[in-house]
Every structure is written in C-alpha cells, then in structure tokens.
Image: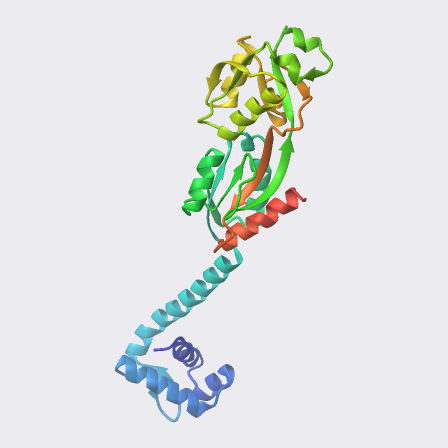
Length: 293
C-alpha cells in the first residue's frame, strides 16, 4: 500500500466520480482505476460500488476513509516535523554554562533564540569549563559557554574578554588609591574560588600575582563568586575578579587592576562541529549576531 494510492482513494471518495477525480489528480482515468484496483486487491475487498450512473463507497470504503485521511494527515505532519528538524526549528538542546555567564551573556542569547525558535526544548546545566569540555567530548551536551578558549577537536567562538578588577571591603586603605597595580597587593589577604571549582581562573589569578613578584596569601576559598564577594564585604580579605562580577554587590568597592596584560576571563561558546545538530547551528547564528567578531 502506497501513500499515493491512499491519496487517490480519498480523491475518488470525495468526488465519487473517476473522471473528475482523475482530472483533479492529473492522471488518466484508466491509470486511476488501475491504482484503485491494486489498492482493493491489497486490502482484500472492494472500496467502491461502480455502476454506469454513479460511484459510491462500500461499507468497507466508508470505514477505510477516515483512517485513510488520518494516514495522510499523519504523513504530512511527519514530513513537516522532519523538515523543521532539518532546519533547526524544532529539537532539543542541552547547553552548559559557567556561573558568570548567567549575569548577562546567557540571558541575552536565550532571549533572542527563544523568540526565533520557540519549539526547541532547551535544557541548561551549570558546569565548570573543564566539565563542559568533558561532556562535549562525550556528546552529553550540545554546546556551552566556557570561561576560556578550548582546543580542538572542539570548536570555539570568542564572546568577550574581561580584565581583572580588585574587590575591596569598604574602608580598605586601597579604596582611596586612583590606580591599583598588582605589586600593591603583595601584603594583602586573598579570597578566591577554589581550584576545583575553576582551575583556569585560579591558576590565572596566581600567575598574575607571580608575574607581579609575589605569591598570593590565600586565606579563604569558596565554590562561587557570590560567596567570595560576601567574604570580601565582611573584611576578611580582597579578591581579584573579572570585570562583570563588579555588578553583583553594591557594598563593595571595585577598582580596575593595572600592571597586568593577562585577561581574567575569556568567555567563549564551545561546541562539537562534527555532526552538530541543526539546532546548534541555528544557535550559533544567534550567538554570532549578538557577539560579532
């Protein structure tokens, strides 16, 4: 049984006239009759009562008609869904992100993407950059916003680079200094995220201090930047942060750090180019529109 034959049956059932049905389909009447006969032979009985005066449906034909219409409707829907999937209009996306991407990068991307592709289901996972790299390699996520550029075989698109700032508790002596340089922090107590939470950020911060001629005196670590800043506000120590983090609390003094050429954070979007789902490619179009190079 072919969908073409079912379409022919429906047309004849609607017209109840073989010549009119053949004209509507665009084939000859004998060819149409032959196709209907083949369909009847496969089903096992007549679908139409044919006389010289009229054509009507048999009881079996009446029973078959709604099912035939349902089959065609379902086939059209299946083709439509598949075409949408090919074009990235529907599907599923699992996206990883580092904590700081939630402050503005992730919301700005999702706001536009959801308007353009409302039928794509999105799952979001907060993961460190290292965790995202691992899950991308294992095909557990489709893409992710990472804190530093990743290497092949993954693809990487740079979003934004952020410089270092110093977070100081209110009343700290350095809050009155116009330009804070890395060497000014030699005797300071540092609060930072743990290396397990973000190896790249931790190692980068230590390197900045080492380049300034000293090893940082780390008095406390935390699993997230919010906790780090809370501890700074309590006067336990200072913190080196990336620029966008300075908007998280308003009871802390933030100063740009001079004397270092190293970026604190390099936001990028990472994905696996090989066999990337159409929805991922559509997401990348949105990403590149918001963050053009």
